[in-house]
Length: 307
Image (cartoon, rainbow, N blue to C red; front, side, top):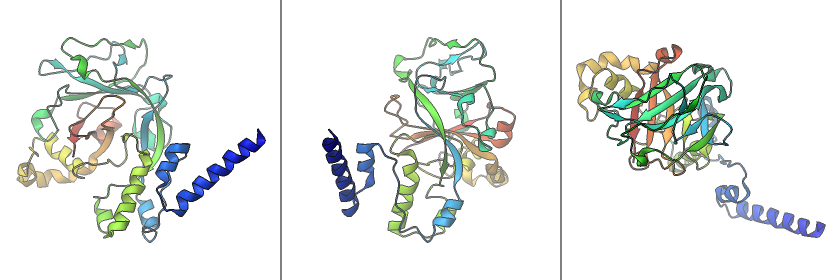
């Protein structure tokens, strides 16, 4: 028996060394043996210290067990404080709920309420993308501060079965995330192709080939990295489905307000939950820091981006 264990141990080491010698991606090895994916930084070494200084804390959302209240999809668990939101005569689809007591505690996490539950909803037909002021109301974020008398909430009439997403239990962990490659500070580094590829790998490795769900921190844009500005302009009545809103004289006056907007939730397309946003896109919920300090989620702005 000992010889058999030793034999398989040697085989494992040989495979590991073979992967390294051949310069193959460690990602396949990680999938086989369940080890943590680590990106070897070579081409970026001259910029690594600066790049690392740009990292921001965020809260990763990933598949968890059934022990908690947090989940993606299914039907919400709430109390009398939770009223299912309606838009244009139809109930919104339930996306997820976040048990704030389950968030890992840190100085950064104090941006969020310390207790209670956040609920996220969106138009069941995905008819809005957040670039039109008229889209307001097609998503909703509800906060209940007390978790008393919780019970499953039944689906309301008018919510199609196909818009009740598959339930996926989730858990949270603290991460440090790099800015998107479109960030001005990264752009100014003038990275060559190999450096750009390495930076992309470095950033994407955080989610280990899983859906990029997260709370707070830098977003992972699919189409553009100015969602803070878009949220500021559209929420103030400017249409940004084309250049119209950006060229409006009012835009210049509003631009400084973009700095008050931060990412609240990024919800990726997710096969486990049966969620697909556009063409493998993401939903981004943005909130003003001033509103977040007051636990006011009534003015959250949502943007959908896809490839």
